[in-house]
Image (cartoon, rainbow, N blue to C red; front, side, top):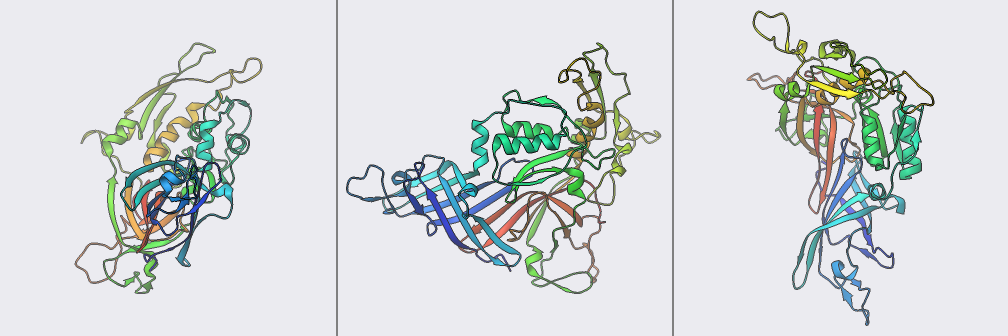
Amino acid sequence: MSIKQSIFEEITIEANDQSRTVDITSGSVAIDYYEDIFSPTITAKIRVINTGNTVVGPDSKDNQLQAIYTGLPLRGGERVGIKIAGNSEENPGLDFSTDPKSYLYVSSIADVIAENNKESFTLNLVSREAITNETTRVSRKYAELPISESVKKILENVLKVNKIGTIDKTSNKYSFIGNLRKPFTVLTWLSSKSVPEKSGNGTAGFFFFQTVDGFQFRSIDVLSQQPKKATYIYSEATETYDADGNRINNDFKILNYTIQKNHNLIEKLRLGTYSNIRYFFNPLTGNITEPGKVTFKYSNYADKTNNLGKELINLPKISDNAGKTLGDCPTRIVTGILDIGTMDKGISRESNADPTEYQSQVLMRYNNLFIQTLNVMIPSNTNLRAGDVIECLFPKISRSSTREFDEDQSGLYMIKELCHHFDATRSYTSLKLIRDTFGRK
């Protein structure tokens, strides 16, 4: 099973002036690597214990060796190369050491403990682009382009990223000015205005995030219909079997799990997930959209989207004798100003990425995706990425001796965030899984 230890092949840290490089492989006791579809950058943590006599300090007159914290010294911004060997075919490991452009950078140093003969500290790491994001701004105008093209231009020309992953094409165009905002701010803002190329009602909504494969600009609808990356089964037995009695590779066994959240109805109603009204002011005519013209109802869109589960939410009736459900009554009122004519030459009466077409859909997709939230621990699998879809099978709780899976709880889940943990004795992967519907397809 891949829960056994992984080998730290190379962990080096380079001084800010690039005059000294220290190998901290033997002193690294634990490494955590993180990805999240809500985070525009990957992050990592390394816990280091050092006994001193490691590096010649910058002010040393007799080449006397010092500890890393004061001898390098550690001040933030140092480059770190990491290479961790995998321990199975399903767990190839991580490699941020082959190209200096792929190195991680120290964003902060925490938990520093200094004693007579040793020191310990935690290095918090980010990608190079996370630092570039703080030193650059989006200033130019992007006009009459599909949003996905504007995203690509910002990644290439402003952030100058080392690796671009998948950029799902958008069907809608949007003209805007950067207004000297940070690139990550603009890219995250654009994701909430995007509609995928193969679009239909209810398909709006994107995520912008980074994985080991590069920066991703992904449609929720496209992510939801991708093939499953793997199947994991929960069992307390030493050996795991599927419903047909076939023995399962223990590398694909769920070690433990907890259900963090299961459909918070009050929260969804407060956010207007199932029904809302939007009023928009038109600055060109001075009018406000007619009441009811932009009323959104979940029932009109839910069955037109790609869902991870099988069963849509059945909302309760308003009262016993009412023919309406909670999805027929708007629970949130949102106001806004239409963007008309501000980005075009002359006078245009066309809305710039008409919010009446996508805003309520985006609200539904983002909030519905968190109807079910699970925390899962599995044997280390560095093939997994944030945004991947996996299948989880949970046994049915009954007195029957037959092997049956819970068809309601089991099914496809999307990886919202993951953490690969490595230490001297074991390695495992922790996942936060989400999905928008119940049941197994």
